[in-house]
View 1 (cartoon, helix red, strand yellow):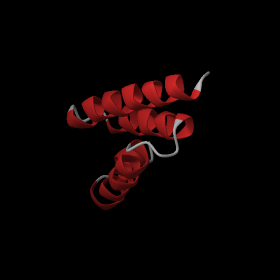
View 2: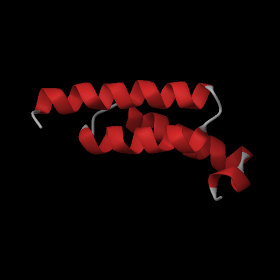
View 3: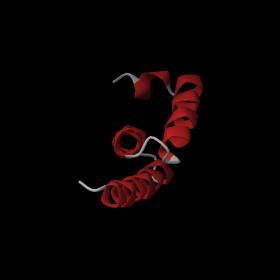
View 4: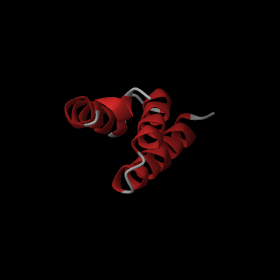
Length: 66
């Protein structure tokens, strides 16, 4: 995959992750963020995943570790 395609797909996954997060589907959001970060290490998904990890660790320990 070309670099531009990777960046575009990473952005798509980041946005999809945001939609999942807003809908309360945290596991799906994390999976999207992980894949986006794999495709583009400079993606905003890296920070979004870190923040969601912090939130989940603080509020939802049982949901984070099913």
